[in-house]
Length: 324
Image (cartoon, rainbow, N blue to C red):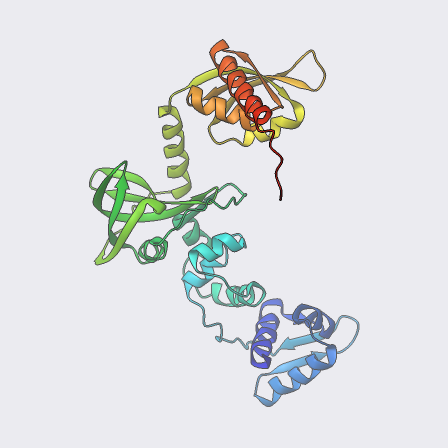
């Protein structure tokens, strides 16, 4: 523990230039007396630590001194620039002590030829700030992550509908949206996006590939998402939505809100929306009841009413007492 703390002190001094005993103690969660002992230990080890007294004083390294004890690779540095969401970090297998590693990041970044952030953005894209666990498993994520970073081709086996297929791909980046992971890849048939939970096998090949110079992962994802949404069937409906249910409706993945205007009745909003199918519309509306009323089409209103009556009848008939 002390060795880690001494390295942290050394890197803090290197990155900040000058820092007081109090700041060091608060950052490292130790006493100021411990900091004085650590400084003495650094001095004995031959590290040129200087103390400047006075109100604006503090500890600093001798001018020109610089350590190379970071021990971090560009990949590790880039990983630290991801949002510190435990689920994302666990999925990628890059959990770390962020307070310590971020200090190492600053020291190592100065020696990299390219910005770690730009390298990261080329290969991993997180769509949206939220993280909602999907329950999906990703046995091939680690192999695909390695191939993305090292630019190796991968032979994958995956489920295409009900059929099993194999492809040789050049993985250009990983995307996570609402807890679901995808890989964007070049194939012999052009760019494709694969849902990683449907990939059953991934063999990283010795053969490498060259990333297209003009490829932008975020732009590709936005364009492919737009194309996918435009290809989906559209089922329009007019709804009356309570104000307190509007936020939940807007978060629904398969609902496109076209227009919303206040209704004459206080607390209600008239919403023009598009669903994918009548079945999907009915399911989503029922999940948000009693905060939504279907104004049109009549067939959708009838389906929702029928489902509600069936549910009510089920409860009315279930009159036997239960013991819990």
